[in-house]
Length: 462
Image (cartoon, rainbow, N blue to C red; front, top):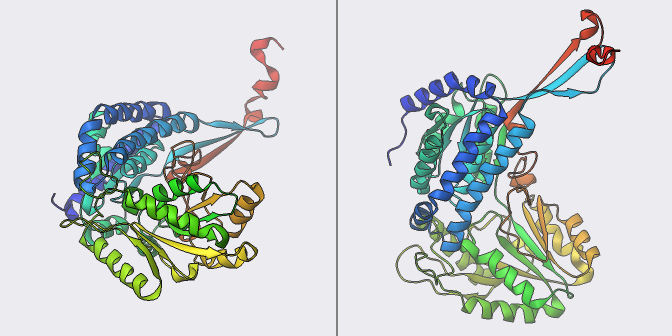
C-alpha cells in the first residue's frame, strides 16, 4: 500500500475540518446510528476480517474472532456513551432565577495512531471514540497491518459515515505520523503503542505553537503476577500460559514477570514446563496451532538477543524450538534473580520467574513498582488480604485476581494504564470519551426575563 503524501494529508485535514462542525451538531444519537451500523458491518464481514488478521498479523483463529468481536463492542459501547453524554445540555443545580447547563462537543480533527498487535480492534475503537464525541478522524495504522485498516475504513464509509470525516493515511511514523502530529489543524491525538514512541509524540506536541491539544496514550507494560501458597496450582498454570504466551506474547497486557513463593515454586514451574510442551507453534491458519509468528524480523531479532542475555546472566528453564522459516520465536521460561533484571518491556513470548520469600514480599515487588509502569497486574491467592497488599505495592490500571491478565472486555473491564503505561482515560470505560471532547457551560439569568418559569409553573396554574 502506498504511503500518504504531504499533499494528501493537507487535503484530508481540509476536508475533515469542513464537515466536522455539522457532524458535531448532529448530536450523539445521530452519531450512534452510524456506529451501530459499523458494528453490524463488522460482524457481517467477520470471516473476511479474520482471514486478513491471520494472514497479515499472524493472529490465531480464536484471537481473530476476538478481534472482530472487540471492534464491534467498541462501536456499540461508544454509541451508547454518545447517546448518554452528547445528546444535549445537562442542567446543573444552581440558584433560583438562573439556569446553568453543561454540554460536550467535539474538539475538531483527531489523529488516531494504532498498533499492529490489535490491528482491527484498537484501530476501530480509537476511531469510534473520536467519532462518537463529534470529531473527524485522520487514521494512521501500523505499517505492518495497513490492509485490515483499509477494510475497516471501507466498512465505516459503507455504514453511512461521510468519507470526509474519516481518512486512511498509511505510512511510516517518521513521515506520515510526524506530519500528522505537527499539522497546525490538529486538535488531538489518540495513540496506542510503545512508550518510547509516546515520548516522541509528546515532545513533538509540546513543541507546537497554538492551542495545547490532548494526547490520549495507551502504552506498554512491565506486567507482573504474584502467586502465594494458597493459590490453586492448576488454575495458576492455565492462567500463566495464556497470559504469557497467548498471541505470541504480543499484547501490551501480557505477563512478563511471575513471582512465585519459594515453598511451591518448583511444583508450579514443573507444571508450566509440561504445559509449554503441549503448545503447538506454526501457521495460525491451522486451527490446531496455539502460537503463531511474531510480527516481523526486527521483533524476532530483539527476542533472540534477549534470550542470549538470559542464557548468559540468568537460568533458562525451558525454550521451545521455533519452526524453520518465517519469523517464529518459541516461548521461553527463564528464572531471574530479581525483578530488577528486567527494566523494559520485552515484547514477545518470554516469561521471567522470580522466587520470593513471603516475609520479603515488599522487597521482591519494589523493583517492579520502581520501574514506573502500571498497566496490568495479576494475583493468585485465596486470601483477600494478600491481593490487597500486592495491589498497594504495585499500582496498576488493571488488576486481575485469580484469572488471566489479558482479554479485557469492553464496558466490563475498562482498559488502560498509568505511569509509563498511559495517560487515560480507559478504553472501553464510562469516561472514555471525555478527553475527545470539550466542555461548554452556559449560565442564563432568567430573572431578567420576568421570573423563574420553574417556580411560576405557569402551565400548572400557579
